[in-house]
Each structure stands twice: as structure tokens, then as C-alpha cells.
Image 1 (spheres, rainbow, N blue to C red):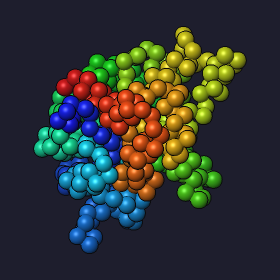
Image 2 (image 1 turned 60 degrees about the vertical axis):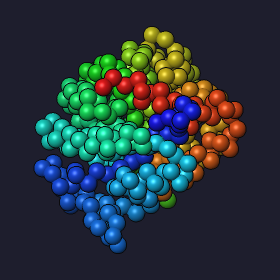
Image 3 (image 1 turned 90 degrees about the horizontal axis):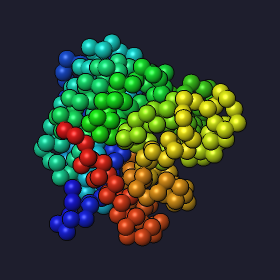
Image 4 (image 1 turned 30 degrees about the vertical axis):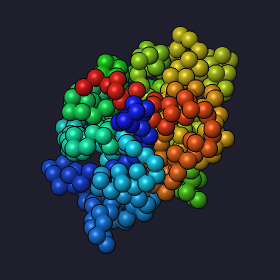
Length: 336
């Protein structure tokens, strides 16, 4: 993952893949929900009988994904499942089976080309002790963490998840919190694509605030939690959350210290669609907490993520950190 001169390459930490093996094994999803079909010589995903047209770039073949990334100036992809392939509301045995099928396929992709790929797996997060074992097994296979739907359980600050946080901290896993696409039930979000443009960042903010105020990051300071889409709406709410903790008893959470300390422990990707917002993220969090992301292959991704970062003119050190140095450091720290 490094250039011949030793400088970190460019790493995209937000790149989704659907592993074809999941659809052929014992734990394949119900075809009425999701199936892969070949259309015009290309594998395409159909959900509830309709093509997932928001996936506008390659979504299945890793070699093609890597070639597309290279044309965008990206050297290395941190792959993660499409979030709806992370099982929720499924019994522990079936959920673990679906996760293992994906993790085995992802591990094979990484093993075949570690210079171009790392991967985050799936864990049965509804079953925390099983999720802890699945995470340890995934990292032993060569994966570097897991993707977590933001609306898992009673949101991610739920006390039942403590065994999972302990396991994640122990292996120094990367935990990628991603909105579940329809995690907020609100009628207004059914209009104008608001379920994505507003609902997704709101869902991420809720999950992150819940984690912080539940004291998870305070109790587990070595957790490495990466928030999708620039942290969603969370950056705009930092001051409000801090004031609530100071002024309102019910808003104080389970923290012994200020909520700002927990919020500062999150990592975020660069997907803000606004260079001014991204510059503010880097200024507020520090360049070491911001990682390049594209959200490939989706229509709401950044088609020129590298160009977006370079347009900020952060200086050589900070730009190198955001483009790849931070990701390389987190990936290399995982215990496998």
C-alpha cells in the first residue's frame, strides 16, 4: 500500500462491493429481496425485483473496481459490504452464516491482491457475543474490521453491545458506521430523495451521538470508529450536544467528562459534497481524523474524491494524511 519511495498511496475507505459468492451459497438472501443478474454482460443487483440503479459504477467485480479507482487516482480500496447485506433482525445462526459467507469472499479478494485491497467484513451485530467472535475470526482471516449499520439494535450505544466493543478494541479493528439507507421512518423522507440526502446523514448523527453520550468511546478510548459521509449531520450538532450536556440533566448521558472529548475520537470520511464543509471538518477534527472516501459505486458518491481533497490545498503533510496516510496507519494497526 506504499509507493516505492515509502509515501502512503491514495486509499479510498468508502468503497462498497457485493460479493457474488453470497448469492450462490447456503446463506444466499431470498431472491425476492436481493439477487444478482447479468444484464448486458454486466452483473447487476436487483432489490425487491427492481434494479438498484443508484449503483452507477462497478459493484461486483473487484478487478474492474480497482481499475476504475486507479483512473480516479486511487491506489487502494478498503472494501465493505453493501450495508443492506449486513443482516439485521435474523437469528444468530443464520446471521453468522451470512456474515461468514461474505467475509470469506472478501478475505479471498484481499489475499489475491493485498496491494490493491483491504476489506471490512460483516458481523451479526444484533447478537453481540456472536458478533465479537465473528469480528475476531474476520480479522484472523485478514480483514481489518467491520461495517456496522447505524440503526443496529437500540442504536449503537445499547449496553448489550459491550462484549462487541471490548473485542473490537482488543483487535484494534476499524468500525465503519454507515446509515442503513432507510433507518429513519418519517413520511417526509419519501419525497425528493430526502431519505438519502437528509435521512442518511441524520441517521449517522444519531448513531454517533448515541455512542458518545452512552459513554462507549469514553469507556473504550482505543476504539477506531469511522463515520460515513463526513460524519453526517454530527459536525453541525457538536455545539448543541455540548450545551445540552451542560444545561439539561436528561442530555448528560453516561459520561464522566465532556461530550466533546468523545466526539473528537471519531474518524470521518471526506464525502461532504462541499469543499468548504470538508475544510471545516479538517480544521475542527484535525487532519489525522479525516480519511478519503468516495462512496463508490453510488450516485451520491464523490466522483473525484482525490480532486476534492487536493482542491483544499491543505499542505503536503495534511494532504498526504487525508489521502492515504491515516488509512494506512489504521489498517496496519489491526491485530490479525
